[in-house]
Image (cartoon, rainbow over all chains, first blue to last red; front, side, top):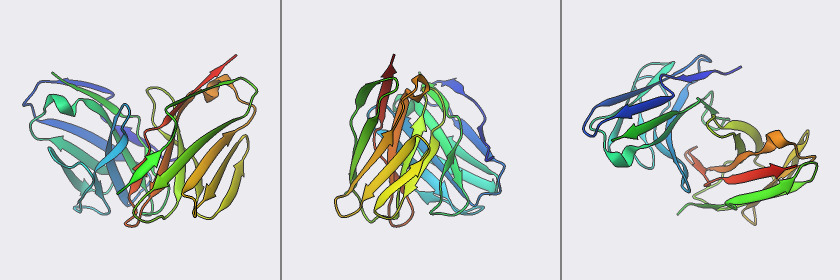
Length: 112
Length: 109
């Protein structure tokens, strides 16, 4: 079974803080993704990566950056957290680009 | 532009059949996925359609018509545990998944 884990289930941060969200997958998947999920908007792609040290912008990259130093780990960074970044953040991975994405449990981030 | 529409909420009775529709207009098409998401949990994969027609998997079936930009997820013999959000997602050219807002299904006894 594919396992995707995220470092925290819940986080509370203050405006202006730097926030790190970690995601690890244990199935040697090439592709990893970061989404945010907001009521009424569905999942929206922030960034994705097809290989180590490689990153591509998704639909809403503003205010975020990512890091992929190892194949199994994909980090999402909020350089200076803002209240409009309060959301559920979901990480996913897939073996091939066209294949099924497997999701982690999500991190619910509250920015005060 | 990209647009995926599905009903916001549906309610059905235990033991019944329910059909959740999804219409899409996207930049290219490389397949359509359905995911199930229970409250507070990760989305889990249900089905994938890339060719027209019906794919059956136990109590769940998914249908695709590419010419109409239309899919549905059919759930038979509904159980209380089927209460969840159902997400329709289209893989566009460039292999990006675009999600609809999801349909909250409530199963009542």
